[in-house]
Length: 270
Ligand SMILES: C[S@@+](CC[C@H](N)C(=O)[O-])C[C@H]1O[C@@H](n2cnc3c(N)ncnc32)[C@H](O)[C@@H]1O
Image (cartoon, protein in one colour):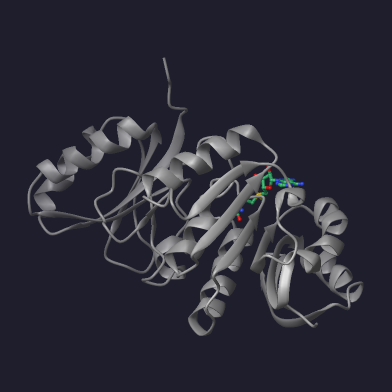
């Protein structure tokens, strides 16, 4: 029997009827209840599985119009997280949340809730890039939960190859691809960069550890079309500086830094 793994969830609510405050501590598996830092909202933190989050959302909806569910997410709540960082085009939600425009991400073992700074910066660079460029073919190398592949598709990519060497990550990415209805656009494979067709991509996304990136970076230009792009992340600020110093086939268009991590948008020179 399939068993969902326990994980952390948060639900952000707006309470119009303060009388409902009494009901909230009775929610199953409630771990924390606190005021949002700079919004008149409450955050409910829960530990559970997808079935629990569904149940809790239904329970909250059942409390009537005195309470509004603003959003929900996977992972520990951070005040500066999701909704404020991602634009309206890229809203990431936990499965079960009723938001037809959001990208649904379920993660249990794979990396990629969207909350890690390395993922967040990739998404910021991706969104900026795709605002001005049509990118038909994208390769998401080290897809984890599939989050970058899904967001690239949402932003207009027509075909995305998403690979990961870890089978569990591939399974989760595949489930997320299904969940979001992108089976015809995203192909998930258990492999590394060797699976990708040389010269076949407008963009390579690579949020990987330093040792892996150092090894793979010389191969990335060969995967790209002339003037193709690459978004790198997963490195500390110092590691990124060292890596960029050592490569000359790319022009660095933009770098971002958050909490000691760096990400870069590069363009193939020729
Ligand atoms: C830091 S996570 C990034 C996940 C997701 N892309 C994101 O941005 O949140 C790195 C992922 O790369 C995978 N990975 C590590 N080495 C790899 C390789 N050589 N080829 C493909 N995937 C790899 C890991 O299994 C992991 O899922």
